[in-house]
Image (cartoon, rainbow, N blue to C red):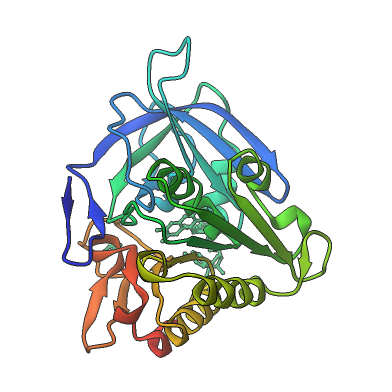
Length: 291
Ligand SMILES: Cc1cc2nc3c(=O)[nH]c(=O)nc-3n(C[C@H](O)[C@H](O)[C@H](O)COP(=O)(O)OP(=O)(O)OC[C@H]3O[C@@H](n4cnc5c(N)ncnc54)[C@H](O)[C@@H]3O)c2cc1C
Ligand code: FES
């Protein structure tokens, strides 16, 4: 394992293999894909996979050609009675690749490369960690929440979506020992409105009430649509709080070859999201240059 100067973590060489589908079930408007991955080395929260667009029978698939980036939602290890480690991917069907992934049946295999990229830094301490997930960004936060809890951090998770059925993974977060706030734009579950509103309120309160090390250690971790992450970055910056984001730029290769995932840097130039990220300190990003 290695770390950058910002403390954002990466791990050793990724695995290239065929994962076996254990289950592929609906979760509201999302789906949970459970995969057995022989030799899976474990991932740092925030790292991702390049997942083949659908199951492969004997021959390699050529159409669609490119794999799809997906967060490692839950890293289950070797569950009792199983021979291999298993992981879960939580996803929404939005186009051809995810439609094919949704059709993969138990027993079939899906090509997988990972874990890839640099994940979230997890530091112990008394500072509140506020995790903000919007839409499919929620999938990048479950293992982060668990790692922060293991490190002894107080954790507040804020999940936002259009409506109740879009709050994918909600029940898994409810089962963790943390405070959970949900916001839906149509008011069908939790607070009505955008998730950035309770974030601003809770962050202001946390900064106002904290002192010393617990104030300096407060952090925001945000994953979701670009406007949501940009708003989280602005709220955190106003209060002098560090904000880490995980960018979801479309990716073709996942390991620095195609240059398709470049994101503009605040200091000029570009970073490859798949290699330098997907996790960045929000101050490193030129937000106005992202789609
Ligand atoms: C690091 C990373 C982690 C990701 N983790 C997850 C995850 O855990 N769960 C999940 O459901 N999705 C995740 N995504 C997004 C996911 O990769 C895309 O939804 C998927 O590639 C779409 O493939 P498709 O063939 O179904 O859609 P396409 O046919 O390629 O596109 C369908 C529509 O979705 C839009 N789209 C495609 N990719 C993205 C994107 N990255 N962001 C926003 N819109 C997009 C396209 O513009 C188009 O309008 C992640 C992306 C990245 C970069
Ligand atoms: S996805 Fe190809 S360089 Fe990043």
